[in-house]
Each structure stands twice: as structure tokens, then as C-alpha cells.
View 1 (cartoon, rainbow, N blue to C red):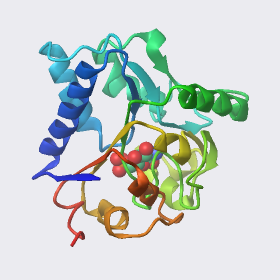
View 2: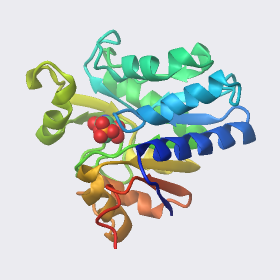
View 3: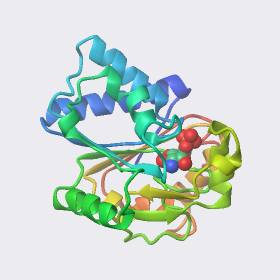
Length: 241
Ligand code: GLP
């Protein structure tokens, strides 16, 4: 595990974007897993800037969504489909045909998730970007998720719904379920970059770096990954010895 502690969120975002830039330049056709949440927004801004400066070309990149609420309409401002387009995709040259989405409107989520999982396992992602929930979830793999888990429908904890309700008009509007790439499938990625900023992530980060592998802290499974880069700001790193 490589741990990078940055001075602030801007530096964190820049470091993450720099690694992505190098990986894309090194491997045409890179398979890239896109994270959601507020944490990677700065990284996406930096990637867009580098794209506009012609320092990066996404034309051969294959992008994969990591998670999505369920059910949710693509047009809903809180869908991760909407987020991914607004914050990133509409500003860069990732081809539509190279975009793999988790479909919040599907009528058959189990079948959909099985097929999505097979698509990834057949040819694992080269680089997965991750944030982390306050409770240590990665993607929407909530505490208790198996470290072998596949892409599936998951019931969100009330705690996650409450934390994420900041983006919705009311907590009642937060979907009760989600679709997420499983932890086992995430672990197949050749490289993972995990980003965390702010003091409310410090406990999850301490579990990752100093704790044992524990189902109640899904992030801890990443300890076993051979090529994990953790990029933190000072606050997220504050509990590490
Ligand atoms: C959300 C998403 C995760 C994200 C995490 C942290 O619920 N499902 O993919 O990593 O929670 O979000 P944020 O970056 O807004 O703190």
C-alpha cells in the first residue's frame, strides 16, 4: 500500500489526476472505474483541465460506473449517472460506446448486475478510483458485505441514507437500495486509488491502515490489494500513528 498524505484537497485532487494521466498514457484502451461522491469532484475538475490543455486524451478509455442508487431515473439530479455526466463525461472525449453504466432504471436488477459483473471479471479494470463512506463502505458495499461479493443490489443502511440525504430534498427521497460493483470484483482491479479527505473519514482510514480485515469495515479488505494507492488530506490522516 502506498500512502500519500497531501497538504490539502487541491493537492489530493491533483495527485490523483496525475496518476490517472500517467496510466492512460501508458495503456491505450485503459479500463477505468469511476467513483462518485463529493471526494473525486476536484480530481475530475483537474482531469477536465488537463484534457482542455491537451495533456490527456480519453478517446480510447473504457469507463465503468462503480455504483448507483436503485431505483432512480437517469434524469434525476441525484443519480450517479447524472453526476458522472455533469462532473466529468460531458467535458471530455470518452466515447459513448465505451461507457458502461449501472442502470438505475432496470426492471431486472439482479440479471443486470450479474451481466455487469461478468463483463468486468472477464477483463478486470486496469484502474479503479474509490472514495470511502464514513462507515467504511466502498462503492455502496455496506458493512457486512462479503469480501468476495459481486456486483449486486444492496440495501442501504439508514446511516448512509441519512448522510447522503444532504443532496436530496428530504431523507424520504433517498432510495432504499443501490447497485454496486462488489468488493470481490473491485479487488480484481489491477490498480486502485482510494481518496479520502476531511475529518469524518479519519476513522475509516485508521481501520484501513492500522486495523485488521473486518467485514464491518469494508474498506479493510483493500489491505490485501497488491497495488493500492491511498491519497489523503491531513484531516483524513489525522488518526494514523
Ligand atoms: C457515497 C458513494 C461512495 C462514495 C462515498 C463517499 O455514498 N456510494 O461511492 O465513495 O459515499 O462520499 P463522499 O465523497 O461524498 O464523502
